[in-house]
Figure (cartoon, rainbow, N blue to C red):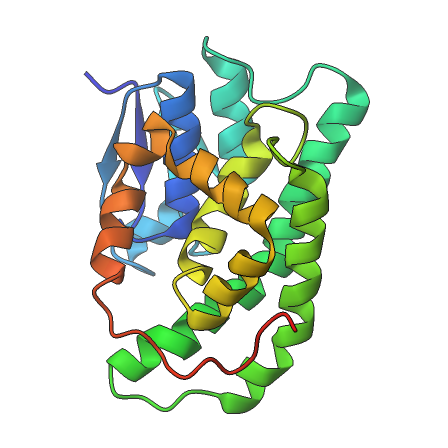
Length: 225
C-alpha cells in the first residue's frame, strides 16, 4: 500500500523530482492525476502548480518543501548533508535550478523540439538569446560535479534530483547534446544519474523514451565554441 500520494499531471518535471526523492528514500507512493487549473487542483494548491504531496493529514505543495519533507520524515539514506554549509550548498543549487536552469532549459526544449513537432513556429530570437545563459549554466554544473561527483559532494542530494529532469531533456536537443559533448564531466554526472534505480524504473525514463521519438531538430544552431 502506498505511503504517500502525489497529486499531479504525469508529465510534470517537478513531479519526477519528487518521485525520484521518494524512490531514493524507499518510500512507496501513488499518483493521483489532476486536471490542471480545476477546482480540485486549486483546492490543493491555490497557485495551480504541481505536484502536491499528501501523507495522512499532511498536504504540501512546492517541490522543495515536498522533497525536504520526504527526506526528513522517512528513514533511508539522507539526501541532505548534516553540516550547515553543505545544506546551504544544496539549497543554493536548488535555487539555481528553479530560478535559472528550469526557465531557460524547459523553454528551449519546447521551442526547439515540441513546438515544431506540433506544427508551430519557434521563437528564433529566444533560441539564440538562450545560448549565453545555457553556456554559463553548463560551466557551473561542470565545476560542481567534478570528475565523479554530484552537485554537492560525492553522493546524491536533493539538488541532483532537481536538476536531472531539465538537463536530461535539454540533452535531447542538438545544442544540448553539443554542450554535453563539450562538457564530459556533466555528461558523466548525467550517466551516473540515469544508471540509478530511481531513474531506471521511473516514469521519467518512460516519458523520456517517448520524447525521444520526436523528430530531431537540425541543423545545430550553435555550439559551445
